[in-house]
Length: 300
Image 1 (tube, helix red, strand yellow):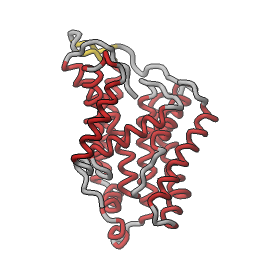
Image 2 (cartoon, one colour; image 1 turned 135 degrees about the vertical axis):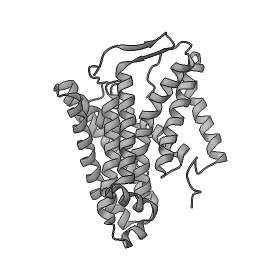
Image 3 (spheres, helix red, strand yellow; image 1 turned 135 degrees about the horizontal axis):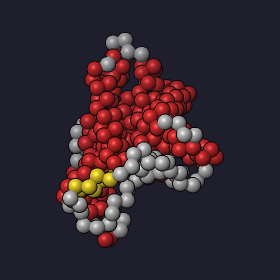
């Protein structure tokens, strides 16, 4: 998901802008994954595939059928919310109730990822798909900061989506129930929270976030079958940086990874993909020192 920034010496303003742009979209991806983990203790290996499906849905409605972009984005969110609810209700819920082994849900999640890859291949094919720009033009500040207007718009929409998600979790009945469920599943049930219903709602919301960011970024990067695995890996990296199951940690994990990538691409552009090697090595060192992440609690 590197965004193809120009390979030349970049100003500090450009690096900061790139970091904010990357960090906002990465935070959205991590939010959906960490919400599902917090609620159900499930590592959703299919999160990247949900992102890809969201991109293809937006491509179909906006790029292929000419539906207005906002409506296409809504359709992407609705499609992934329904898909997430069905997966939780008919796949994860029975396995969680029938087995106490975490390996069961991990194998199920991996199987769903492979299944969704096959569905994407059958329905959309393996070719790269793109859509027309939603806005044209480039913002240029004395050649120190150059950013296409569509990237600025996507960044703003991503930040607004993160704010809306935080507001939902903090100030709505659904959000309070989800937070209670994430903190203590048994206590929430004793307090009258419908665990089954809110688990389904939480999984649907996590999948919807993946579909939303996929729909936003198809206008920038396009979408193809192979993006699912790479997106899942980056999502897990962000969750591990911030702390598994911690919403604020997911946001900080996305921001940190975004800035690491922006700085690495600016400083190490002449060495090709060594940026990602440096990021992975840095992450391994960090986890060796603090395995619970920045804001997580020690495992177990």
